[in-house]
Image (cartoon, rainbow, N blue to C red; front, side, top):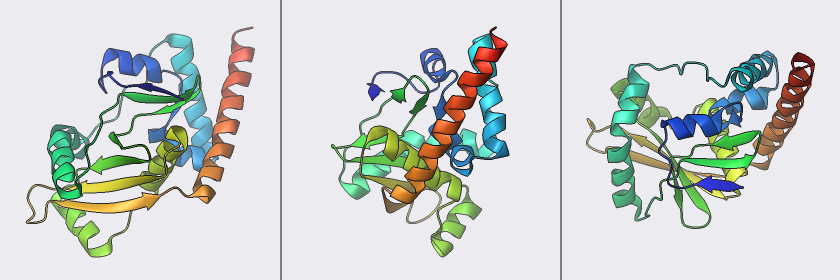
Length: 197
């Protein structure tokens, strides 16, 4: 596993290293291993063939998250006492990688979500982690070889701005991800070998 420590997420180098790879943000499609994975595979094949990534989907909440991530990370460090090490990308191999929000010590990592007011209130009430976020975390844990991740929910408008939930490695989820990764990687290679003939 290779870690790109000094790479800025969202930079041209970051996009280049992610090109054609199955990543943590794709974890739900990968674990489900169905039509979504098939669609994802053709997107990755297109990236490899053209050298261009599909335009990244964004919305107001995602833009807000990017704007507030540094503040949320600082708030987490104060609340938890941990120092977060920023990294650009973790590469499991030439086909698989992910971009965690930070690494902690030798065994931990952090995933930060800056939820809007309504979703923050909902999380305070339900304490339920979205399946896509859980699978993203499990894929990050698998790729990094780490044991746990602090799932950090942040909203600066609330009296308690930061909620931290510890998520441990789940071998059942990781087994599904491994199967999906193997399937997806095999499909990409098969399609490319036929297209490139």
